[in-house]
Length: 163
Picture 1 (cartoon, rainbow, N blue to C red):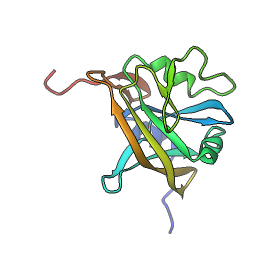
Picture 2: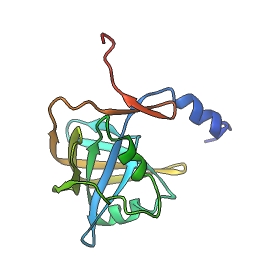
Picture 3: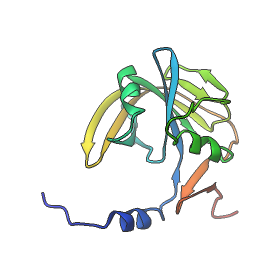
Picture 4: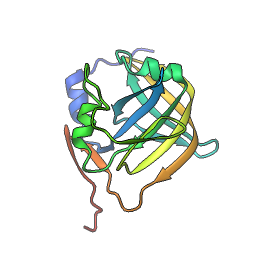
């Protein structure tokens, strides 16, 4: 199938108008916590319970998480913008100064909106990314914690249309 050539910068700019939630995908590999920020997370299926996210082929964090076969999706709170930036950086200890609790899928970051424990279900090649599907085995949410939102290259908070 031939795909039209779309300027990647313009593609990114136009799609940045769609607000997304922000998650950190965590796991434990060789006894150490690992994690990466992701804003392409979505629910996929209710039966069976599946979630999905995409990860760049260039990610150095995804291969160890894949090898662990399990992970925790941490839905971040509105005060987690700096935490998100740290989980996007290369060459640092992303867990330095971060409080977390051990969960079945991986580290549950303290103060998150929700935690979704998964095992790797499937992966699909999709251009310069992989689409990852996780089978959900455990879920939990924090009461009344507003989520972090990413839109037009910036972090913000969610407000309902009536606010």
